[in-house]
Length: 126
Image (tube, rainbow, N blue to C red):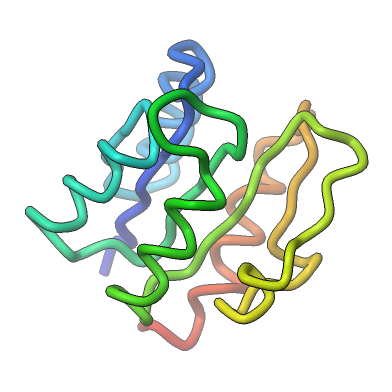
């Protein structure tokens, strides 16, 4: 059964690149340009296994999205991707179940890094 991945990032080119890569790997994807849009997508169709989330975005930051989504959709796994080299999880994200393992730092040079982490985080969701 294919996994459903929600790509939440304000960078169009990155979202498109990841969408094509994930679809080539057999995943089903949906894209959102910010956290507010991502919450609306989840409300319409809560079928996602994992959300790949940028932190710094307009309208609603990624960390705010993760905190809200983790309460409403506790089965959803999260991967943070950030260009902030010194990014650390705050207490609210830790309470939502995230660890340093959930963080990828941009640029991610090997795309299989994403799929390896998605598989690791979602293996109990099958």
